[in-house]
Picture 1: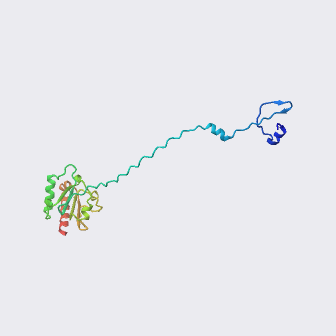
Picture 2: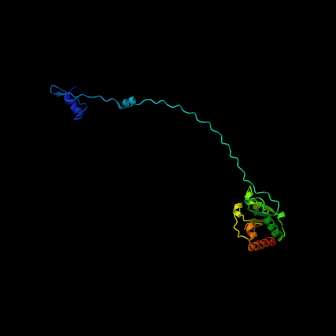
Picture 3: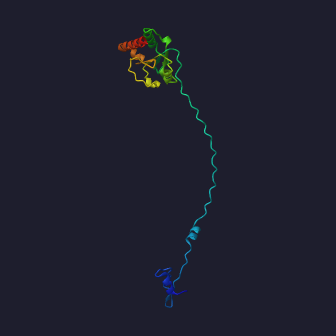
Length: 199
């Protein structure tokens, strides 16, 4: 089986293994090298990695149901007239403003004693939608407090009283501004006259 002619027939011109010029007499010796299976080679190179121990799953913490936090409510009203002012520096109105407001209300048959006067800057709850919806007041007068701050989406021109679903609204400038301006005093007087006469 060491016949060079047989190797030539089987492997044609391929060189299976070359050992330089080794000759036995006049014949070339061709050595055949058996190839080791690739899988075995791969197996010898792979080192076994120890498997990491599986971490036990963390116990599920039951979700605490969220407790709804109630928004602070608008203050309870005792009178049919609600007057809103905005004095960030002090909770009570200045004495001069209180006297001016009382005089102008008296001229239309009312007074500050029979009105709820709230300072917007000191309110815990500013959402007046329930007051409007439940008709807890008949007259809603704001001095320098935009209605949008009270969550009321009503577009009203200043000094123009308007009855909306049984509640009268009047939007004006801050009292300190009106008190210093004769024209604004007149506009406020006319607006209050109209509001309380018609009703």
